[in-house]
Amino acid sequence: MIHLETKDVIKWWGFPNSTIINRNLPKTQIYPHMKEATDKHFLQDSVQNIYVLATLRKDNTNIDVYEDDKELYQEIQFLYVKTKGKGDSTKIYKMLSLLIPYPLVILTDEPDSFTIYTGRFEKKSTGYLNLANIYPSPVYQDEELQMVLHRISFINLPNQNMKVLYDGIRDEIATFMAKVQYGETVGHIDSEKKDKLDDLKKQMEDLRSNIKKEPQLNRKIDMQMKLKKLKDEFSSEINH
Image (cartoon, rainbow, N blue to C red; front, side, top):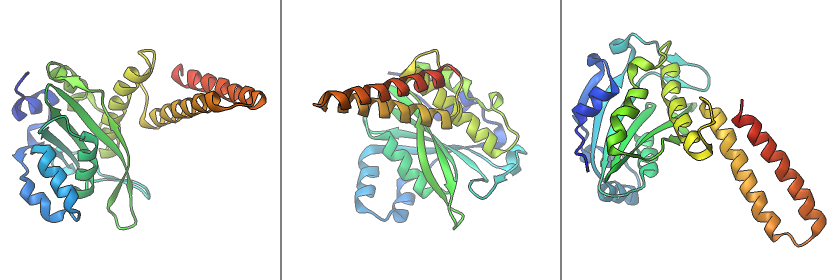
């Protein structure tokens, strides 16, 4: 088991000095903003420490803010969350995304392994962000962390504006996961294509399950034909 320190994570991730925070975020500061007692208990029981690693803004990066009718990227925050055990890191990401009004990249450190979480955010009429979907990396072993963070380090990302930069991180994470789920033949993909692959995969699994249960031969054959079309579509998406 490797003892990870935030200064190493920050160095490997390659944040510009002007963006580095490296400060503990006490859970006591978070509790007053949580409405549900069950959420407070979950945070208390599952999370050991939360650190703000870095914050990217226009004034410390010279990267432009992005805003349109559906999206808003004013600031990007990078957090490091040390869990108390093999907790539900996805739930931790959802919870913190509700409390922090910026697109988040969260590195969760569980015993002997870590996962990097990104999301897709939509702007609500109030100006706040709604988490529309979550994109976790594969579960990596601690000794792989330096290599993985280098691949999504600041100098390797597009930076025309904050949205482009965040999308660059998210798409790399989506590609990492797709290669694990669907094979190394998957090329570089964006999050929308990852969503489509996941949806096709789920449709195929549901159809296979229904085919096994279907007693009528003609319906079974019809469903098998639909499954063949889905397989072809899935294969086409993988190879393009």
